Image (cartoon, rainbow, N blue to C red):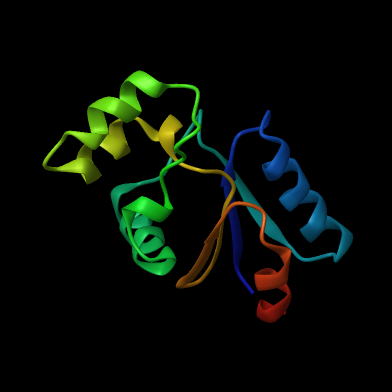
Length: 111
């Protein structure tokens, strides 16, 4: 398994995901989305794995202005990449598979 966890250090669900993999002694790479964020290739891969952009966007994010702007854009992907604070966290990747949010029942099937 090649696990990557994308999230923020202050996100409670991201902390739970990190704890989940640590408790099972599964190696993972943590990527802080505030410092680094998703590349365009990673974004497209995750978007495809989770079933589209709508499943990636957090409707309850703190930046409602950016969320409103994105909802009226024609090219939403580009705007979401510029404003990654509207993406749900954590994003957990295992190769081509990915989940958004805290989903231990899915991660168990990866082991």
